[in-house]
Amino acid sequence: MVKQKDSDLSLNLKGTQAACATCPAHHAANLKKLGVDMENWDYVVALAGNPNTGKSTVFNALTGLRQHTGNWPGKTVTRAEGGFEYDGSRYKLVDLPGTYSLLATSLDEEIARDFILFGQPDVTIVVVDASRLERNLNLVLQVMEITSRVVICLNLVDEAERHNMQVDHRRLARDLGVPVVPTAARYNQGLEELLAAVNEVATGKVQSKPYHVKYNLPKLDLAVSQLVEQIQEAFPQVPNARWVALRLLDGDERIIRAVEEGELGDLTSDQPSLEEGSVGHVSQKSGFAQ
Image (cartoon, rainbow, N blue to C red; front, side):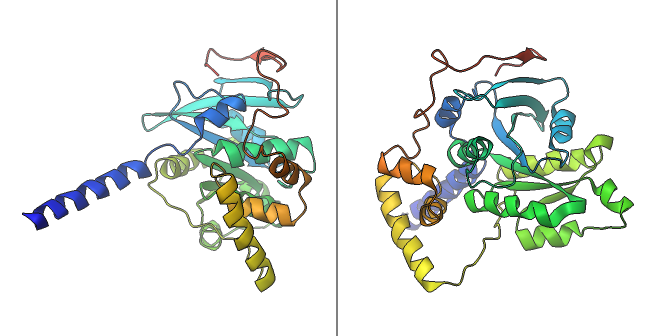
């Protein structure tokens, strides 16, 4: 009888783990502080990428007319949101500012970084230009330092082909450890495959193991591990203590200030409430709720 109970408990635990694997990963409270309301939505997807990679084309192709624009709370930077449905689930797509990095040397970079780090989107799509892949991989690697829930949209493959360039997207996926989907968004090519990849990551059907840069510096590794322990103890709500530790060692003033003032992860700081100061929607293209 004891063995039977142990067996039943094991099955129940496995069932619970399987169910959790399909649960949304996003942080709804933090998303709301960032101005994104997840009521009536199942998953949130961040859309990141360098400027001039066709990111806006991908956004428009995925959302159609189901989109609206406004400003990030307390900021003058425009935010576009849209939505789509796939396999019975409703996805909210948030278009992050186009950036070359997440080092927070500009307001756009700070917004993109905070959304990925603290909002914990269920999936982050990083749009890259297939004809200029090398320059785009810097952002890809930085995003993968923060989250494993990444899908690479290898866009403008048509442009690459015109320059007699071909990218082995399967090899790239193996090297990066995340799904890579070739697309030509302006011609609606590859978008169905992109949606399928997003759905698999969001629902936990695909568990990625993203590549992380290895520094091979024992002193740095020791410093990071020591900082990680302190960060986790002081700020248990921070989803990626290792990334925060690396930013502290790199002298990131925004992160240093957040630690010194005890506000790391508190997205209400430096951001007026919606009632006090955020700018409302400047255009409304559909009846979708924010």
